[in-house]
Image 1 (spheres, rainbow, N blue to C red):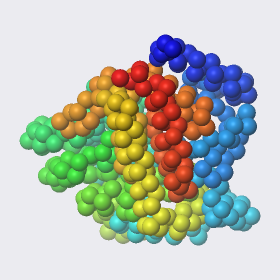
Image 2: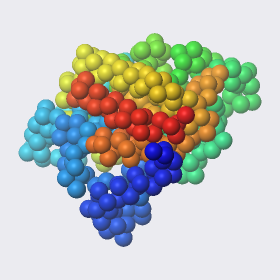
Image 3: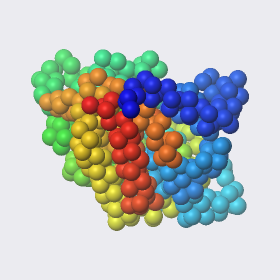
Image 4: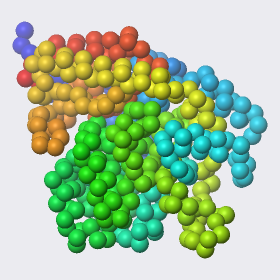
Length: 440
């Protein structure tokens, strides 16, 4: 039998997807009359239309068509506790009974702040509504305190919807208009050379970096690179900000604790409010005291308003989330992720496709890559990305009841078990048996 081509397989996969999801298609068409693109969160759009989900429980999602999927995306890392965690559910139900939106201080924000500060070694923190907002605030604080303008970021980074840097040559046209230096990620020599360039660094306010680029393909920074950034910040008087919105789930104290490198500021978000809206920025007391209205030393005081900064649902859910997420639970989840990534790469090698399909990541977060694999001096990356291969894989997985991001991003939860990992591997191997020829 003649093997089908990639284009034939993709065409058939799209046809099957459309015919299998008529209610989702109709929902998308209806929504598109009022929402541009039929959605209000761009990352959720997928061609020809996204699946509409109507319920979720544990680690499963149920679509409008009544199909059940194993969820390996889990709200892009925010769903670390899975869907409908009973402890978090009871906490939220209790809050609903006692009322919300006080317009005043509640009993939970102080407790959540204590838990976060103790877990991540932060001296003082403030809450926001998202990781995007947390990073915006951290940059703003750094500029005010240093009196400088330049922000060092890295190609491939995503620090929120207004702070996106797809490559060293491009950034989102929606980015806030700061003066950014966009450097190559994980490049020691570039940073060392930058440190010698007094013209470039004399007005450097902050260095903002992910210790593993989540949206950028789950590429992890080396400890040497992160230490070099610490040295640069110290030498220039800039503020080092670790964006741990995603990566804080990869080690009990975040990746900064794993690497033993303490930044001046840290930003957090995603899972830390048990699935509710949340962001956090914090760091050294000498930095964060600019928000202390009680200070009497004549120092600078900044205002940080925000209607939902201390929304009681997020505050209460966050307190419960920290209780659930013991070191043992976190380590078990990340070990399972390490197993999945290792075994996926072994499958790619078994079928001889490792130069066209492979997996990167740390612990419970990973990304599958499709294209021409190239080993760079500082990081492994896709020389020529194959969107069609990635799309074919995604349609295959979804058709077989496994849900992940269209771009190949995977995030585990504390509810995943070995049998769920084996199902992911089983469906992947079936894909390789059917389509390995187009990957060779």
